[in-house]
Image 1 (cartoon, rainbow, N blue to C red):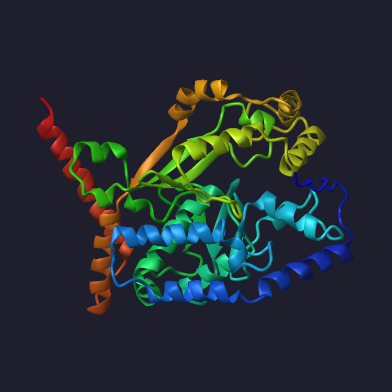
Image 2 (image 1 turned 90 degrees about the horizontal axis):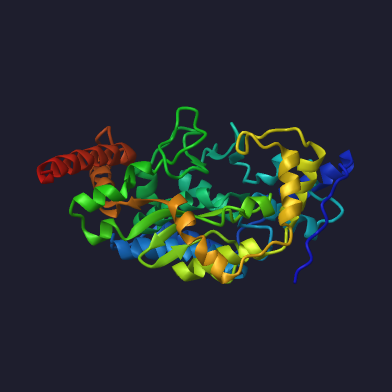
Amino acid sequence: MAIKPPVVLEQLSEPDKKQRAILLKKLHDEPASSQLLAYFERLKEGSATWDVDTYIEGMKRLANLVGPERVIYYDEPLKGLHYPDTFAELWNKANPQQPITVYDRDIRYQCPPSWSNGLKDNHQVLTYEGEAPLGHGLNELLKGPTTIDCGMWVALLLWMGIRYLIGDDLFHAIFKFEKGGFIITQNWDEPINKAGTVGNLLYPFYDSPSLHKIAYFWESQTRIQIKTIHNHESYLAKHLGGLRRLENVVQVDDDYIIFDPGAPQAILSRSGLEEKLMKAYNAPQSFADAERTWMYTTFPTYVHPDFAPKNWGSLAEEAKKYANHTLNEIEWEGSKSDRENQDYHLVFNFQRLIDSLGEARHGSFSGAVNGDVLSRAKSLKLAAALDGLLLQLRLSP
């Protein structure tokens, strides 16, 4: 079993902070590996066939690149995509003289210089601020180090699938954002809000499952679903800094694509996902858990809006109580109904994506002013919702 690095409670000296910044800059400045560059070339070329199987192939290729095939594409473990706290843990193992301390929060939100990454209104937001075309910026993001969570991952996965399908020349022609306009947030399941702190630019391609129950849809429109799947209700009581309170996943048929950098598997069956969540619950408290426990114990009266009315002190006491708690298979199965009642999902309408891409490509080639894919998708989504409503009215007794 790997030994987790100790929580660093001492603040770094200014010389050590400067040295740490130099080391981080060096990481970002290092070129991508030849294997990663070959993957970028594949994205640039796109695909001759725009079908759902090719789109799924693109998503699964990225999932494996980030997951089990990571060592092929990255010669440095700190490069690529990470969760914020696991990046801190990896960093401290590699750089014990210039560690990320418990006080260092902003540094955990890593991104290339052409991006910004951090908390806005208590939500993590990743924003492209670069001058180069978006595809180049996304390549830089994958080169890393970049820190995201599973909610941001599902949006990134869908965006990269689009590039894999249509290629970068067309991608740049029909997806145009003002500087700072392309954002990825933790909330995949709602439209972008005015503040740009929550929501998903690709939301116009999502449908409620209820719409697909009352209307006829091609199979390609329903094969891809985005889901939030929950762990046991006591997970956060045991794991204050835990990553597995829930899993935001892309489900393709019976496969679940997860975000778990470097893991042996990035694509699981439902039973495999259930097993992973249960193991996460039963795992010993982690480096991130230890950091949060110290923080909550040190500032016991603070009440975070996500945990109100409980204060940090009471949460720290709960973590001590649950420290050695585990669930057996019978207890886990017994919680299935409660967990599934919390789950949430939307359908990714692939045909709407293809229709929007085709219309935008035609508009771009013909010189039309309005070549915006997302605006077209919104119009098609509204039309589908109205058609579904009319069908429901006709079927009503």
